[in-house]
Amino acid sequence: MTAKQPFFQGLSGLASEGRALAGVDPPPGGLPADAQQRMGPPRHCPHPCYPGRALLEYAVVMPKMKSHSGAKKRFRKTGTGKLRARHAMTSHILEKKNAKRKRRLARPVEIAKADEPRVKELLR
Image (cartoon, rainbow, N blue to C red):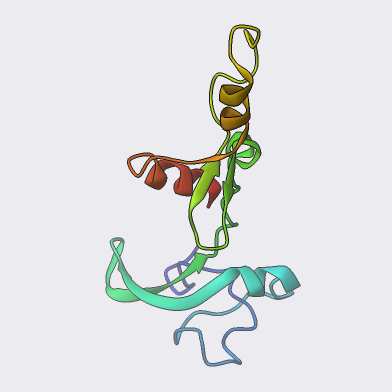
């Protein structure tokens, strides 16, 4: 790289759109079609190697975070935004529990307010 060449290359097609800095020559060939969608708006930032010169920086949009697959199976969000879950103590040792208790435990229960933020984060 010579002193005359721009420090940052790889932003083809942007000079014609008015999005590139003066002095940054786009390389031949251009960007892939999907790269244009993934790049955010350009930002100008000073580069430490070139104190008097600005560098064009592009933010890449990251993919969405996935919901926690275990939480998806255990919690359900109601229409009003409450979180519901299964009752505990319903999978085994059911002989000693009376029928009324088993019926009550079979219905879903609203989760505690203290646990709501954690579960909402997992379901996001």
